Image (tube, rainbow, N blue to C red):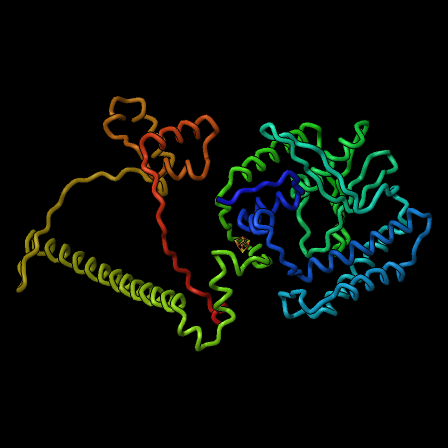
Amino acid sequence: MESDSSTKFSPSKLDTYKNCPRRYRYRYVDKIKRDAKTVEAFLGTCVHTAFEKLYEAVGHGKLPALEEVLRAFEEEWSAGWSPDITIKDRAFAPEDWKELGRECVKIYYDQNKPFDGDRTVAVEKRVGFPLPVDGQEYRIEGFVDRLALGKDGAFEIHDYKTGKTLPPQSDADSDWQLAIYDAAVRQDWPDTKSVRLIWHYVRHGKSLVSTRTAAQLEALKGEIATLIRAIKQDHEFAPHKSLLCDWCEYRDLCPLWAHAEKVAQMSFEALKKDEGVKLVDQLAGAEARRKELRDKLRELDRDEEAVRQALIRFAEAHGVSALAGLEGEVSISEKDDYRFPTKTHSPEALEALERELRSSPLWKEVSHLDAHRFLDAYKRKEWPEPLMKLAEDLLNRYAKRTREKTVRFRRKRETDED
Ligand code: SF4
């Protein structure tokens, strides 16, 4: 059984687990090294290096010209560029990305020169704090892009983002990474009065600022402890499919993608021979036939209903309630029935009805356990802790735990096939 033995966690390590436990396992439990680098990450590294050099110079009382900072960026680019760096969107060549990086440096430089709005304490500074979880002490730490002191004496934690997304303020207000650094700074300098968290979205020339209260930081430590507990108890490290899979370096190992990755490299001849490909295509054929039959059945239902309505009209017109044909006979009867309000059409009426029934002795005659709803709510963890515990106890005592495999087919979209 796989299990994690880490005693140190960084925000990005914790994020990896939150986004996909399987990727976490490959990277931090199995320690499978992958050098795969995306152009987005490489561009970010080069811009960070340029800013590091810029602030080192500013710290020595020197204001480098924009050209010097751009040169630092370009030197880092030339030294680190390799054809192994992946570019997903083929509409852009390495030169376009390099130009974008230059533009990021230029935007930031023009907006912040002469860089006297604060005093830099350190760049690329390691910060952290100890966190006890279930009797074991863990260390939570990471690197602050730039730690500074504002003119009002507040610590400022600066983070540079070169991605194309400009997130809303609410994302900054709920971000973990810089909040963790905030807690670390307060730990190292206990007389700290206030800390500002500042994200520079350099592509957009826009900065987001947020702060955390002491209570929020305590709650954050609690959340981190819960997550560490979950990591330590996890032996399955289930893969979680998401948009991030597109940038995952372990797709060839991941049970959700390994076959697709292999198939993508195959020749047409090899594809035709692959047993997995053949089975998927057989299922595709079966699904297509099922759909065809379902459509046909729906059409037959419509035709049959039209005949039934015609029979009712015919019987009414001729004052009869039974009709004879060559192949059989038809009788037409009439009965009174009731239709209750439904959740879709009259939810208020349905609620009122249920309320009245619940307070009447009739309730126990007509109500029953909705096992599907019970399991659904339990799996989605919809209830507060005490109810979840109660549900778990009932499940343990009355339900039989099973594990079944299901096969789900998803047809490729036109563009995929192209
Ligand atoms: S490909 Fe997706 S699901 Fe698989 S390990 Fe990577 S992130 Fe997780």
